[in-house]
Image 1 (cartoon, one colour):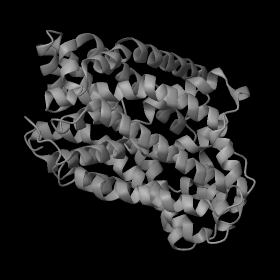
Image 2 (tube, rainbow, N blue to C red):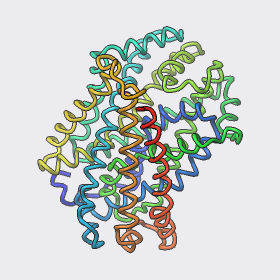
Image 3 (cartoon, one colour):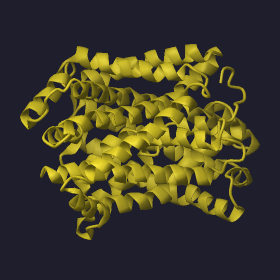
Length: 453
């Protein structure tokens, strides 16, 4: 995409599916979902999450992709062209700026967390002992408190990301996803084989597959609703950018379903692997964000062959983070590439900008540690602002544009399905999904304001 006037579709439908999967399966699925499942009670949360995937996640995904497919240009121009065809206000094109800003915010803290993954992958390769919980907590906190180490690992990760983005999409993102996504699925399979040998497997399966309805709460429903939107990489514009590359005859409905189900399958498989370790070692299921970096290394270090499994576990995290970050970077790289008519320049500028933005969440653990906003530390506020505030607003506007401003015939003709099926998904996009996302947004705003006050 050098000139970005019109895009060339990806080489195959499989490549497009792998690209979408790479965008969806990342920190949300590998790091965030397991500990939230643990906090919210297991199988019931997964069931409610799946319901909202259908009602909110998949429709939002379709709405973004169809914009790119119809426009076949960079997101802003695609929206403007669709607005012209639909006789709607062309100022809708500014929506692309909000989505790109959202992607940049998320990627900036995404890279910091991904740097943690690189650090622990390195530690696991070196055979560093993590067999003591207090020692693990000290190790993790020492790393967070060291801005030089954190900056080094996050900078390496951003270099990995934007080095791929510098290539044309067929040589960069498409090739990366074609190689790494199968590796990701292979590592998940190997982790499952390991988990099947552990004594906590039966308990983990029961915890993840048999809902306990007594744990149903408003908080559980609200959290599941938000994650159904967040974990499919919707709202940040990258699916809009990718939609421009979808093969002409590929069904958006079918592609969205496949990616959503793959994402759910990965979440369940990772959950089985992690919670088998948790139950085998009698760890609390609600161990929170430190589950992957403190608790799991502790358990694996004390298990037979666990020290051999640990590098695979953290390599899985790196692969998921890398593919997702490259996909999140695409809207910003696309915008600058269009501005300078050169993808290398666009990628370089994007990388520098995101690196500078990442200094805020990175330094919030050390140099900016004393800075708080209300009752929240800077990192928590920064990440909440991006994922709980800007992202839902962007997603809501995208749903509104496709559902209300776009010509309905245009949508039905490009969604790649029978008209009756297309009308059903259009109904969700017009009425159900925006309503659910509005609930998520209002809930998050109340939480954010409460934490500040």
